[in-house]
Image 1 (spheres, one colour):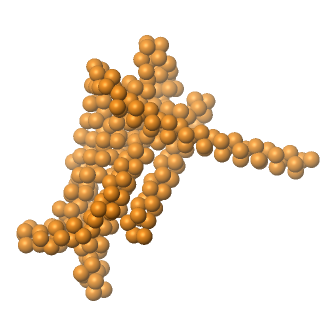
Image 2 (tube, rainbow, N blue to C red):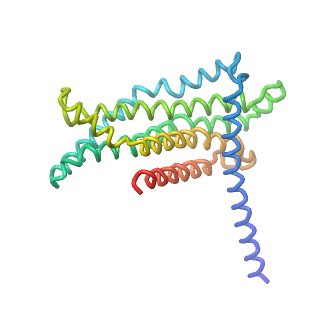
Image 3 (cartoon, rainbow, N blue to C red):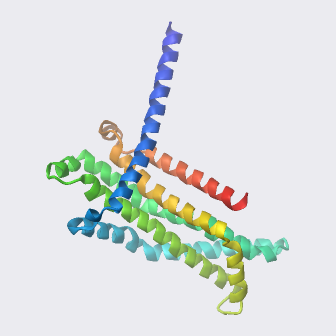
Length: 267
């Protein structure tokens, strides 16, 4: 009897956990759809809402541009040097430059940019939403006739999405320039060969996969932490003070996107 009761309790907990996980994933998808609809709505760009959105676009991107650019340049220079020296030691110098471009621009840079934005912007934004709900600020906005999703969540989501796309594009340019300078130096003699290599690497299929990967990376980083902070049960938040399930889902989505992009590029 005790064994049967224990088994039934374990099955019930397993079912509750699976249902909670499925609900959390559905809420993330639902929030993405809501944000998309609000982005296409002209009313989201009027008056105070436009000012709040512009503020989030600046505060999540502007202060980190210089620091992230320097970090990306340093990272690219170090990795380029390591790969080229290793390739030369094994007699594979003819493949070194292409490998550097593929590894840096196609794989590492977009992921690094999105993780940087997650740690710097979107995860703290999710924590801000949690504190806002715990203080009852969302209920106050609703009593004033304001939609908290439109006034508080949407600007943060748009700011995070813009930061991811901007830093990813900027870091790709920085990577290409850094790789060229590391290999050819301050001369234009290697520009024709480097341009041909760039065109060879970025075929139409690879370019499409790269664009889609960067876009989905940005959506995952911008939306999942906010969804976790906005929809997590208040009772749990009061007890734990934080929500780690959203971070797990975000990293899982990033991993799946990266695997799919590798399959699209190399298989």
